[in-house]
Image (cartoon, rainbow, N blue to C red; front, side, top):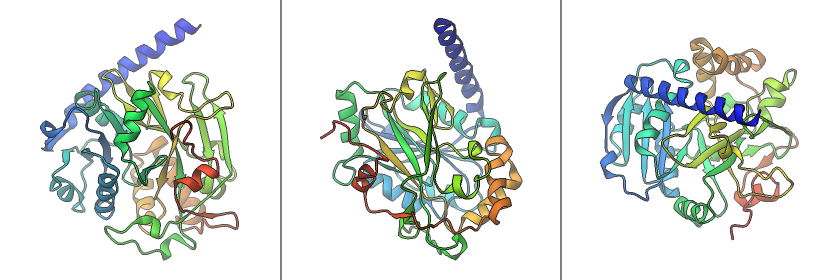
Length: 336
């Protein structure tokens, strides 16, 4: 059974790689600066649509973290965000009018670009509202993490997606372009997480947090997955299978010690819940381009009109990565 399963997964991986090659035809280069990529550069891959208000802080945050080059896919934005990204000297930008849902939610487009530009590089794959936190990120660039992982013969790095939210109704926040979103969305759930094991792909499946207790209280198994494998030493044969929640080959999913010990891990601070959220919910629930025809966004709209107060008496105010380690949400492992 083990040999047969491995064979089937290899076939699945090849099929998705072929699919990505076909979907790559939907991409048109707007600003291709990939010739500037150096052999040891850490790359960031991202798909976005109408995120002009978020992009300035996004670029600033990741430049300070040490990202050397951004490879971005604009899914037909109409708000000026594509023009802003195009003007950045460390950004290579592609445009597509293709359907987000038909591209495995942007993964096919990114897989195509990763296959061309990421092999041999550490590649960070995130959304525009996700901010990578790792041990010592306040004092060490992301290249230091990459070097330590290389020295430890580790090819992938896991992160828990931590939903951040304001105190009070989301519509009452006022986020301005270029602002640090965590000046507003400063709170998170320190507990309330459920973990199970995906025996086929060997990853941990993590659910919980404010979305589970607010939007999916009556159907917890439908709550969004919070487990991610965002940072990978890329090879041409790799492909994500479900956003960045899982990846093939499946050995790359073993980013947590499942025998009771600890592996070094990180966090993706998720700045979804700002006042821009209400309009986004209405748009995406109608477009139906996200997972399962936008089921998650429809749940947001149905439960609270996309304007809940996620704060509760157990909410914790964010300080830094050391706080997250003390709470057991991430670990520095044996990286000293």
